[in-house]
Image (cartoon, rainbow, N blue to C red; front, top):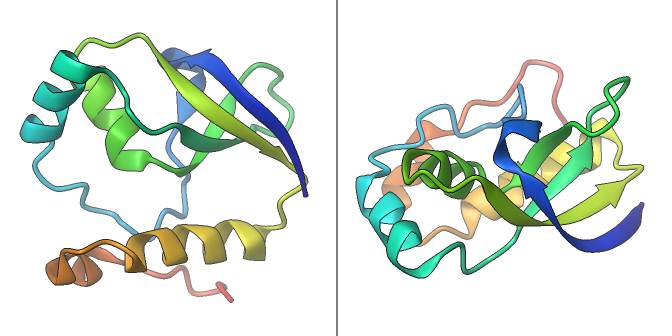
Length: 116
């Protein structure tokens, strides 16, 4: 795995991970209002989209990305990580969701059948 640092990427080039275990992002209204008022306070973590130069897939920050789009924000600070295996991607997404303070959020997690 290689971290490329923090860069600003247009949200139109950032796509949700197809295996994101959090299928329901919940109500994004409050987060969108916060982003509209304060901007994106924490960067997203993304990986390059294979075979599509300049396109990225979200690993951490699915809710932030969706709320930013809802708020009309056009770009986001992103930590770009290259060379993540499928297992590392899933593990990172699961760990991020487990760290959420909302215990109900665990009910929104769905594992793909071939994960971990």
